[in-house]
Image (cartoon, rainbow, N blue to C red):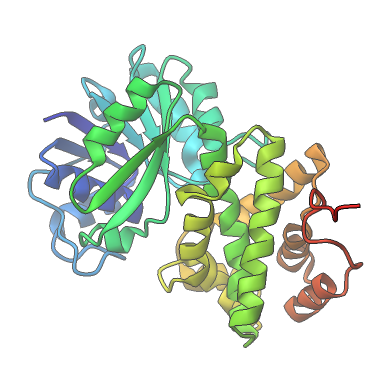
Length: 337
């Protein structure tokens, strides 16, 4: 049994807390929101946004960040991406040298263009930082639905340690050294999922969405490889796997927000109706900035930014994607002379 704290009591943090407690670990959930803590304690059998899930009585809920970070074998960072830096900054004084910390949130920090592990490293340089990602909706993990993810770490030993902590007969964990690829796949797929929701909201068909997802992955992998990620990662769980589930599932807040925009709602109205953090909106600007920085063509990301932030009609954005100049599918593939 290991002592584990989850920083963040949202749906993903709560779902992983349930998983880890059921694995036999001593689990603490931290939140700085008093109402959220009270709801978790009083409504263990009716968790908000996690229907049919039960928070085991063994899980402790605390508002004390020092308590959550002290004397723990593993700390899981599960706050939403806009709050990662502030949470890391506040937690840093309580984090010991070499503390294993695994980030399970997804996003790119606007302004710095840091991945979230880089943000955490910036604030908690003494920690051993890893990432966990893959096609894993919280609603299903909390109910014990079979799921597979990947953990990335700087050393094989850390990756295997986290693998052992999380893995059971319904939650399979693979390991990888490609932290950059894992994080970029998990972050950028949210932007493509917004576009997939828009396509469905506009009433287009499977052909359209399949094309969008395929070309979206081409954009993700182009940028990711330019930033040091590996193609194998983008073809794997945190790449195409996560893209597929986020673009096609009713659980996806990014797809839902896009769907509402495809039906004519503004970005702000769609986000209000979803009533959860829509990571793709937060990552879209950063993704476009990274594309410009690395000289990578990302036309879907460009059009999503125009829809989100400049009021371009979604139908017009899709049309502009289709009427671009003719080209080969892959510039590296040539005919034999």
